[in-house]
Image 1 (spheres, rainbow, N blue to C red):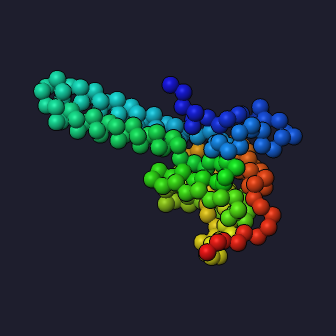
Image 2: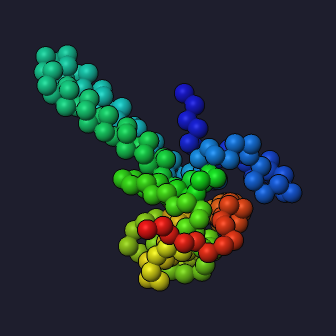
Image 3: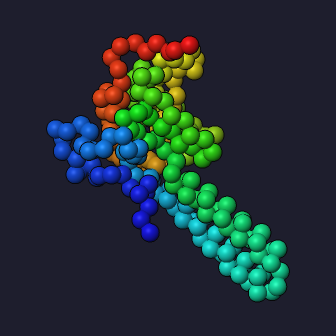
Length: 193
C-alpha cells in the first residue's frame, strides 16, 4: 500500500537548480522533506505493538470473550491511528499557505499573514524533550500577531526528522523559505475586521 506522506515529492538531486518550485500542481499540500529515521522508527514500533494487540484480540475472541476482543481491537486501531498521525506530523506547504501538522492539532497560516521565514541559531529542544541544545531553527514570523507571539518555531535540526541529518535540515529550510518568498505578498498584510 503506497503511503504518499512518507516521501517528499522529489528528491533534492532531481530538482533542477534553476526552478525554485518544480511542481506542476502547487495547490496540492506537500511536505518538502522526508520524515526522519527517528519518526519512522517510532511509528514502526507502534505498528509492531498494534500487531501484538491484534493477535491478542484474535486469541481472546477464540476464548469466547467478544467484549475483551473488541476492546483489544479498538486499542489496536488507536495505536495504528497514532502511528499514522506520527508519520504525518511536520510542515506542509502549498500555494494557499504553510501548514504545521502536530500530533493532535493542525494549524494553517496563509502566505498573506507571514512576514518572514528565516533560519536562526538558537537553543532548541532535543527530540522534543525538555533538554535544550544549541542548534538551528526555522522560524515563522507572522504579521498579524503581537511581538511576543509573532515568532513560531517550525523546524529544528534536533527534532525527530533532522537529528544527525544537517544537510536534510538545510535543504528543507531552504525549500520552505523559497515557497515563502514565492507566495508571500510584498505589501503589508491588513487583517479584516
